[in-house]
Image (cartoon, rainbow, N blue to C red; front, side, top):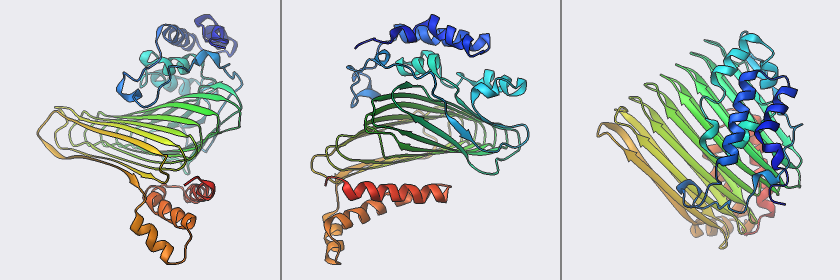
Length: 406
């Protein structure tokens, strides 16, 4: 029923729930503003270029009951002065609460869109990773997102102070019930910080996720993001990097494997603001069954970004004649002083010569397909910093290909 749970999205309810959780007044006020924005902001339409291939006109966010009990599980050992846990727990510590208040909602404003406003109003517990100045986490931080049904609003804030290092892996999983996930991740990479962020997406067959990940990268910082989408009915991920400091680097790598009627939609935006900044985007998708993928990427080089170096690629392999992919990479270059700026996109079926060669060596069609896709994904999977996750994902890809509809 449309709007069946609308009262739970109302400003007064958002404030009441915030007070019940004992949150500070500044956060309750922010939630109220977000709820008001949600109420007056229309749903995005295909007339907006990033939504051209994902029509959500029939989706009513407030028909999904918010899961007030949802909380991410955060595991990791933070160095002295740092933090790895929920935002709720961080707010109990004066020093960490000050960092949260400074950065939460500063990178992604609650008024930017319908899904973002819902997240800002209704997120629960949240995840906060804080790398203190000049220190490194000994190992990766794991953030696990698991839910049953209704609506969840995962919120993740990563703050890496100057000269720090941190690696975060976000695992997402759900059951067979209908679930809406509106996710917001904010990354603050200060001068010379090093941040590694990986998404392990294994949502259930009835889950729809809409995620926005935005990074602010200061001088000399290095941010690398890997996304590996295997599950979910509809997965729309937007990755934005604001390269604000000289010499900042942003790398985004993505892999998606579709089957049946799965729908993947990737949007990337690299904004080169400062001189000698570097960005690299590479999204690879393999599609079986009636699955579909879309990619829209913008690399923008401002007048102030002299000496920028940017590469953007999207490769799509169609394993079935019913699968479909759309690709639209864009360059916006406002200065004539660049080191390199390029983009490329391909959409096509499996190489018949390569398939014939493997079959001539004794492999049946399915085994040959699995080998070709594994090779197609290898450059991204091998680039993951966690060998255990790499092996696990490779096994999951093979498992899915074993039953995919070619």
